[in-house]
Image 1 (tube, rainbow, N blue to C red):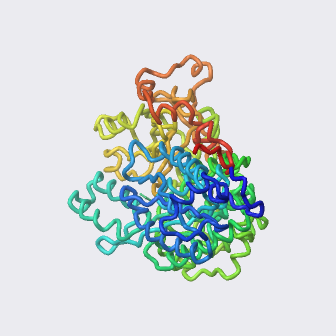
Image 2: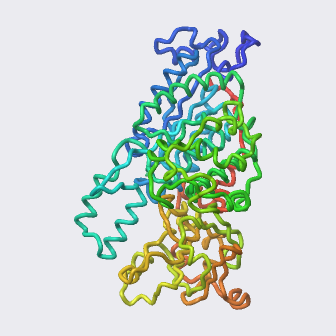
Length: 578
Ligand code: FES
């Protein structure tokens, strides 16, 4: 661009601001807004990718967090620039927030690349926001660090702690079972969300915040700080200072994220009893980095890792309990020997270097390694004639007696079909039945909604049944529990055998041997075709993002990213149009 460019300058933003030509004039003039000339002279331009939104209530406090980041950036000599990015409110966005994760990642990636940005602080919280920000950061490959927005404080109802998400499922089942009145159920609603912050169970938001730290993309010790805790703002300020150093060091995601970092994330995921959604998110992030992470790595690395965190939905407590009990680093210290000691964090130091001072202060909340909540708690990957590409189950959230089970299928062609029939008193179902729901995969729904933890039939609830084997090509909320086999690949809409199951077929589950089989002779299965109701249930959008998504989304076993978004385009400055 400018013939007068200073060859000593190395900042990416210099391509906009350096020199005396017309283009540099235009770029500086519009960004001055009262800033001194020194703002454009070798000072790193730091984007604060902010997912604050009134429609993402879990992230609505991030404007205040952004202000603390700005203060830190400015104090360290950088120029903070707030960049509002696509925000996804898990409870509000239809048809499912997952449909928009890749769009949010793509938009953030492109805006970071398109602008005069040298480094970025990623502010996320609600389920899809940290994954989409990390996918974007991996693909644009600018120095990047995450500040997780933190969980909300524990709310109480009738002297009982309420875990958001988990207790919604539990209380609504109690209403259906007749053990809680509708009036009391509605009364509990205003107690559920006590403060700013994301869900306080070990749901997807909590999981992804902690897993992002285990991955090395958060300054260690920050993740899990409650949103209402003033220490979050202190840490945000420190992160603002830090990102200026990060740019000076030129430490981009691709320069320090290796398979070892993902190994640590998987160990952490198991030790905290984290959400199954982390599987698709970590696979998608790895895909952006060109790291060869597979679904089987979750089983190989994580299956034998003990569950040490007694949080809902697998346990009892909530996220602010985890923080007071010693926090995430105290958990990691217990499994230090399982971590990859060479995996570096965004600070340039290995994760394991941060564990020496960590302590457990409440052994009810964080159990020590020699007395874990569950000895082997990681996600198991199942394969067999019903899931040739794999399916997953979280044994820690399942009923042990159902981990080996054979039952007759009761098939639903869509979630609407399920809701229409599940409470029919004449439904032919018993406690041994296997509920099968299809048409809920990435293509079929579209967007792979969290519907796999199907509510149980009312008539069985009334008999005291509280868990059944359920199989689906969709996802499950991280706050949910039960013997649920999810992410069945290939999904029904992509030609998977799930589309061919008929009510009454026998299905065998054997988690110990990692099998999920449809007990129908192959020659009989080969003669079957999906029925009309099944095919009608698949999405066939006419235009827009949904059309693009259905045409390009990959299956759950590789992270459900779009095929053309795999990998990185880097941070190269594009051509000028002025
Ligand atoms: Fe936002 Fe649960 S709804 S984290």
